[in-house]
Image 1: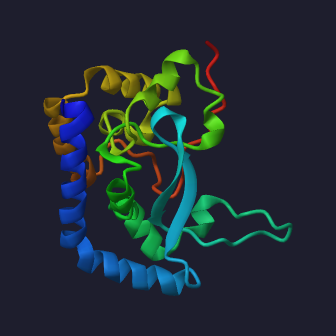
Image 2: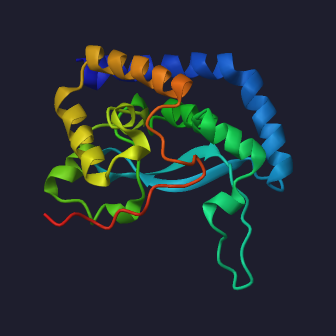
Length: 202
């Protein structure tokens, strides 16, 4: 009952209340990023959700679209704005995903939604991460975040699928708060993204 009914109700009202609480910060970031990113405060990208269904994720745009002389995007570290860097450090770039939760695309807690091109690269076990709604934070995020391998992330995701419960979700929320406040399990730079996932050997 929790998985199929109660959790969705909780997600909706938590996201609604959350947006009201952070609305002053939200507005400041929208205005700041609107100015810094030439009228584009938000970043939109297709991601794979529950059962592999595609949806458009919404995040604050933390990087410019600067390119080199050949038209290729510059490295992430060269495109992150000062405000964008602060957003990344404090995980504020994730706030617009509360809108995804209200729309029913995501949950507060679940495996992170990844790029659609990865769908054909998962093995059978890894694909099970799509049996539940993707989340803003999840079991993998509080057990290593971007400091662990893709394979380990997916093992944590499958663990969550098999053990989803109120108690586990509460544990993830508390650990997420601790990770954000104490800046744990993050690679050397917040301005370096995870390498692309090309599939596992098994």
